[in-house]
Amino acid sequence: TLTISCFVFDYGKNIDINAVYAWLRGKQKLQTSIYNNWYYYIKQIPAVLPSYSGKGLYKLDISIVCSPYRYNVNNDIVTVERPETMIEIGGSYYARPIYKIFGNGEITLIVNDDIMHALTIYNVSEYIVIDCEKMMVHKDGVWQKNKGILPFFDVGTNVINFTGNVEKIEITKNERWI
Image (cartoon, rainbow, N blue to C red; front, side):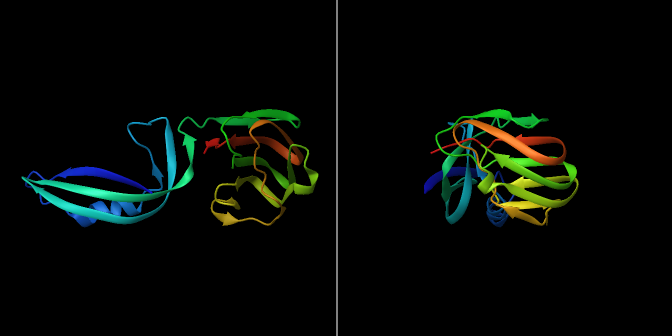
């Protein structure tokens, strides 16, 4: 749990503190000015303690519960166009990537030759998204029929294989550190 203090200046405009609370509820990531190359996923904001300091100045002490992992802001997309492609994963803990597979029909994705944990997606039309962070296989937010295990990445070298009618795979690596 982190506690962050922030200040809101009113300047006679009658700031609606409830609007600040609503803005906080919508936040999913925390990035600070001290560590601006990293972000954390926010799990919960259990408390916001406001205080009025006078002359239009409000102080908010915000308690934030984050996941224990930090993620790199520069999360480049890697494009894979053929099987047996190797991808390097940094970080200190396994990664939960996001795969966007462009293709049609039945497609099977295999990472690190682990056939026992292959993921098969049925009836792909144009593309499919495998979001290992949200633990979801979908197209435009609609769940898609699949069988298998969502493929995470180990730290180090990972080998991407696939079967089926695949044009390309765009991978957001989501490297993470603990």
